[in-house]
Amino acid sequence: MAEQVISATTHRAARNAVVRAVAEVLGKVATLAWTVGAARMLSADDFGAVFYALTIMLVLTSLAAWGFDSGLTRRGSAVPESLPRLFRATQLWKTGLAVPVLLVAGLLLAGVPAVGSWPVLALMLAAGLPELWSQTIRTAAACRQVSAGVSSSLVVQRVATAAAVLGALGAGTGAEGVAAGFLAGTVVGWLAHVVAARRLDVRQPLRGLERADLAAAVHETVLVGVSGLVLMLLFRVDVLILGQLEGAEAVAVYTVAYRILETVLFVTYAINSAVLPVLSSTASSATRRLGVERAIAVGGFVYLPFVAVSVMEGRDVIDLLFGPTYADAAAPVLAWLAPAALLLAVASFTDSLLHVLGRHRALLASSSVALVLNVALNLALIPVLGATGAALSTTASYLVQAAAVLVFLERAGERPSVLRPLLSASGASLVLVAGLALIHLPVLAELLVGAAAYLAAWLLLVRRLAPEQQQVLVGLLRRRVA
Image (cartoon, rainbow, N blue to C red; front, side, top):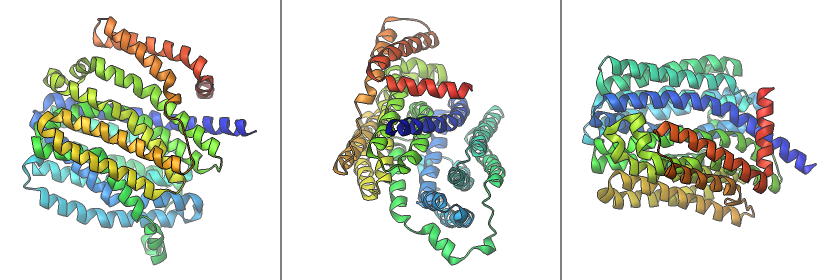
């Protein structure tokens, strides 16, 4: 009976992950498209200035988001009838915090040389508000367990942004046009989210809100908010330091490699969004352990070959996507940055388990240690190695974070395995590395041959080492076909 429960739970998590992943893939393709266009059509300084401003916006909106969405998820899922009031209160809190934060930051940063054009920064900061509102709508959809509408809205946002940015590039409007296109796409995406929200039954007039609603929306969000801000800084502080120490051109080189990394990170977010509810819904330590290990196995299946390709063929991939301007400079950055994808996945999945166990202080401690290390390494390595030093710092920080979380889980009596779920993907990735080293074809042909070799080796190994992983995959595919 326990095995049946675990199997059903695993399949349900996998199905939910696929729904989210499909939308994320489409969105990432659109985002990569306009990033490639901007890299090829803007100067390195303008390209770096755009993404430096984007990074500032993401950090500031993370501050404004605080822990409000997390509180909305927790209370809105537990008491569904309270969701409309909590949803409106959450939007009020986020807007009230975001407006002064974005305005003050824009004024303070207007004269900073690393930022570049002030209009670019202003347009990017303006995009922060509709993005915050869209995030809350996606949170409400998760509470209602209705993902199709908001997933489509996210795709609309990414495609609209790509169309607007590429149109601006074609018109020759430069970095300011790119920022304006980003703002326009974000607003279109928010409007699509508003349409999708009509199906969620979360309408609540502002005049109907009471102080108790506002108090409930902000209750117990401080620790979660600080943790979220620390995690965002851990993810983005390298760009901020790199821009200040080395300038916009170095940010451009780093962004090229970082965008390739970000393109595959949707796997982590999709899996985590499906695994967290499963971990939250069970009191069984065995089910929680299996859920985390299955998540790590899927992450390894994607990220270990990504590391192999980044190290072996990184220069050719960058040349293919972004052109020869960045190929030589960004290749070592990508090689050092690529392992961060798997380390971030492991940290995210194990973080979710700590969250379910209520170990919020441990969550904050692990991410804070990693952030302090990240800042120290960036300050030490960027003056010597430039963008490559930033990449090395990021990967080392996620390694430390993952290790710290595992230590806290051990103390809590939870012992998910990290290495065992990765055995099949590790062996298959070695086959991929050998294949890429031996064959000499155009990069797309090499990747296709390498992918075939990797899949064949993985299937052979997984049947011997972890047949249950294959059973989950086959069952999922059958359900998708049906």
